Image 1 (cartoon, rainbow, N blue to C red):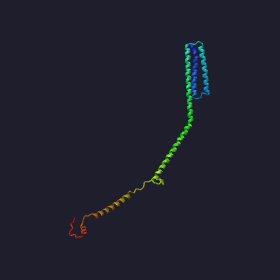
Image 2 (cartoon, helix red, strand yellow):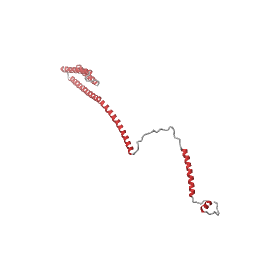
Image 3 (tube, rainbow, N blue to C red):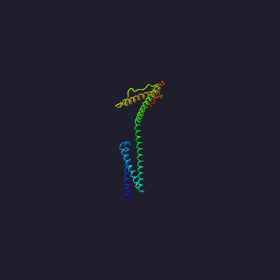
Image 4 (cartoon, one colour):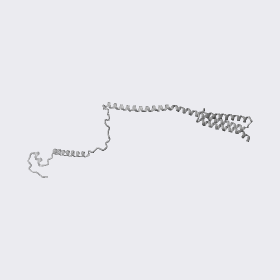
Length: 215
């Protein structure tokens, strides 16, 4: 068992190193392009570690080995393949994100231009609506034969209230009441058919009064 552990130790170290390099490469791809010097250096290290792993596997399998060692090698290959697939997926995702970003950068000026056109169209529509309303109002005035109204002088808010004419109105109303009352009394007196005294009876009949009964 001790000899088998000594034989698998280099393979495990190389496998761990490859996984570490793959993770470093994924992190670099999120910041740099695949053609950058840093990414290419990591690629060379991964390639070299892969050759060392293959050579070690070949040496171990050529020396006879055992089933446990073969199983470890198989697991190492599977993990390496999984990491490579993950790196490829991350690379594809990065390329897609970059393509989307490039597309957004390309359409940004077009979006700004369209927003300016929308703002200009809104302003033109408001101006057109105002002119249409003014024309409609002018036509309505022409049809009703009313001269167009214009403001000659704007109204001003008075600084103090106007003096009240309440007292003058009360005096005028009292005089009018007295006059109307006197005139109405005289009219009623003239139209009243009753005889209210001896003088009135003598004037109406033309005869002398022989006797007068006091009331």
